[in-house]
Length: 268
Ligand code: PGA
Image (cartoon, rainbow, N blue to C red; front, side):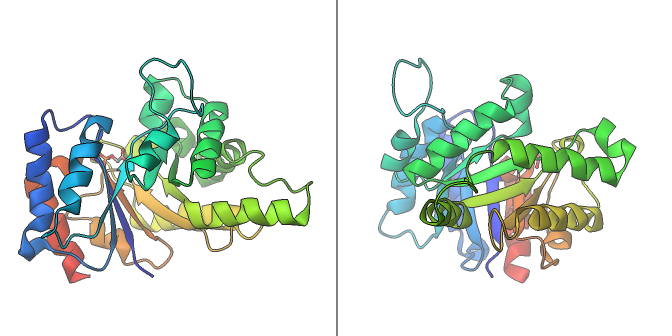
């Protein structure tokens, strides 16, 4: 199976010119990658120009675009928000939902995240749902980490799998989750800190997430790892068959790092 490599640019870079320079790194033949599924998630305002750039005739790139967030309502008077259909109509395929930075700075609750997942599924967007514990939970031990993540998954995916309704409805919902949901295990203490999770510990949680979701919620769910992934450690995660890919933040907008990451990907 193709590994999924998603790049979360967060609130960077500060100009379109710089964004285009980052894309050029992918276009450099030495860093051209055909195998993994590449997803770039830039800030909203760069989605349209970058989608045009990626569609240009001479572009051999296979890069999908993802948004970093979406609003939960279909339409209406919600100043400053971006709807799922706006993203879809722009050709955006993926959307990150429930990133811990949004949970923290925008006070996003599991209830809001659940609504966002619902609208994204209805609109036909693929979701990268982020879950992960903070340091105090991690310090209590792996049992508590698992409990925490299970509870996040149950709340975030609540009512998306209506066990009580007809078989047909169940199958339809399951099918949508099956093909459109990717979970990213992103321990909060590892994000942006350089203090990445030991790959073996990440595998344990990734396996747990898969057990929690399979087979009732989704069969063969895809789970990524994210948190201080860089050019030096990326291969240590990707070598595990349980880890379906990585979500890279800070290193994906550092041009030097990005070049090395792409080089390493070519080597796997
Ligand atoms: P990081 O961020 O790679 O900078 O730790 C990962 C993320 O927030 O998705």
